[in-house]
Length: 177
Image 1 (cartoon, rainbow, N blue to C red):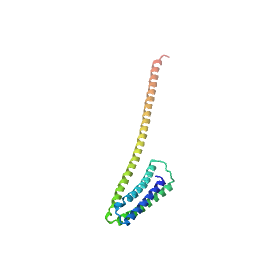
Image 2 (cartoon, one colour):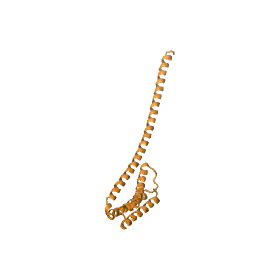
Image 3 (tube, one colour):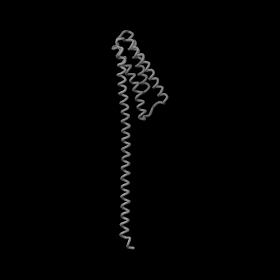
Image 4 (tube, rainbow, N blue to C red):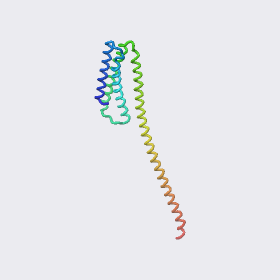
């Protein structure tokens, strides 16, 4: 995910948190804030997906487009900023709406399960790529070993044939001189 998209996701997340806080302050129900809450978690998911994808690309050896320090700073900034906004949203949901106090915990559990599934899928994909690369390497090594064995057989048969011919020739022509 490029920096412009990450910036847009931050802007969406900030606006969503502000919208939820305002709606709760005005006495609206949590269900009325669904779009803002959804927008926040969508933006947060996009940022987390970008970080996970970046880690995934690094594991696969894809070229990194940024300096390592800039990359670390971006990841740290994104993580801290999203954490602060999530704390604000959590407090607004828990303390601002008395009858929906378990909503935030349930959302977090489901979100964490989805994130873990996605992370597992990426790790499985990387594992499959490594296994395929190993299988190709092993197949190539096996092919080379087979060629070497056949060459050894051909050379051995050739040398044995030459020796047997030489012995036969010596017996046949050895007593004539």
